[in-house]
Length: 335
Image 1 (spheres, rainbow, N blue to C red):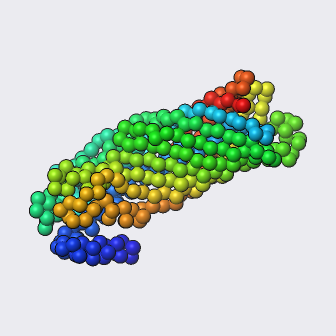
Image 2: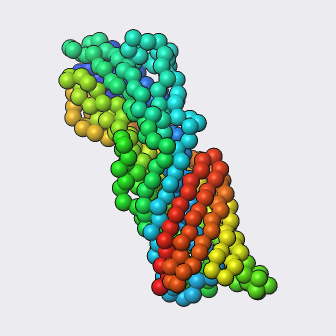
């Protein structure tokens, strides 16, 4: 029903601009093809972005003293999975487009390689209405490495406020950024027998924002230009809860944790929004429909880490695992 309503709205809008019935049908079919391709292409990358943002929040479950400040520089290393790195398209999948000189092809998702094919179509009632588009490339990398900074401030009653921020990291064909806030509370302070054995427990709740973008559908037609679809952006709002426990031996601390999060994922295309021979900004039409492929996902993962102290400095390595694997290395300074 939602797709039908969107199509009727598009039809009415274009008719008011003097478009033919066939052009309206062609454009609606093109938008449907773009949405279907968008979902298959970028979803594996937004799923992976959640893992990158989720691990590394907790340096230690130990109780922080009031006004204690911990500042850390992290290097996150995400192992790009081989699974879900490609998908198959065929002409029967499309309402408007078709694969050039083929009936089917295997193409990369955003986490795949840089293989590309051409898809073509024609707006039959538009002069010079042929359109030719190269399918987008994937990351074509085995790992994604990026730095970020994190800080925490000790508050009352064993509570800490945490924040993390990464600059806009350039990928081969796009960019990635994450930032967030959280709150941690120490639980083992209420069980003195645990802390007497150097065993510590904490809970954490946080929210983070991840943005991942890739080059997308750029037309090679002078008539249509980029159509405003030359970049696709996945925006992820992640709400996280986790429990951590650790055991400390002198300068070394071993920690384990369980993480559960809920992520709201939305998509948007970007690029030049100029009006073409279609007399309508295609980008706006596609973005109005992209809510159809937005989704909410629940993830659970485990986390292991080791932390070593030397003076006011700490070195920590973290490994998160579940559907994907993510590592995180940090150097911390305790003021």
